[in-house]
Image: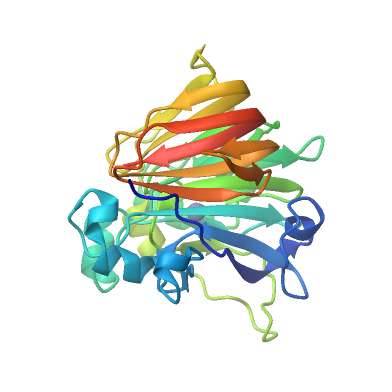
Length: 310
Ligand code: ZN
């Protein structure tokens, strides 16, 4: 039976980052503003080392390449998901991601980026941007040109425990005072629509990608009014999202719980509390990769997890 896979998280400094990944999650992070913890990732921009002795010295992408049996012999050149925690002390840029077809053609065969956000915590009055109001390419180009951001962008209030699905083509931005758990396709392709005229680390504005943004925006998408989770909780489990790329659930454990793992793999992130998984101690900030054929997972303790699988 395959053992649970432990990965070393990787951290990325960002101009909008903070220090909460250290103060609230206990991670050892680099100096300066840290925006992202890549907790389960095989992406070339952050390929997590595997901690299990049996796979010493390997990264997740190497495990994917060499031990596909651990992932149910799934096809594909890359491990498909990327799990992050984001600490936004400032506003992230207004951005949009392409779908698989556009990214394959314009971004060296990269995957597109579909992502979703679970709000781990936020300051009172915090908001997020999901969706935009232009009806077509010409109108969007004009609104960007004229800087009519308040009119263009759909900004909604957020609360701890909210959930947002961000399909490719959705203009979006995480704003200041927000901690997010992000489940996404393993892709780093971002088109920046607006960056509040800020300067990057090098003293220059970060590049914008207006033409690509105009190409990929889904002008027919309906923007959400809020991120309230309305799906029922059944036996501690709430389905947050199911699409062609991932299924994401919230799992609450109070005492003992058996969690079936019939998928090619399952990502698990403890977002609150502490307990054990198959007897191994975990706490808020722990992430695990349950491989194919690891059997049912035995959870115990008082904790909340976000799980995902393809
Ligand atoms: Zn994004």
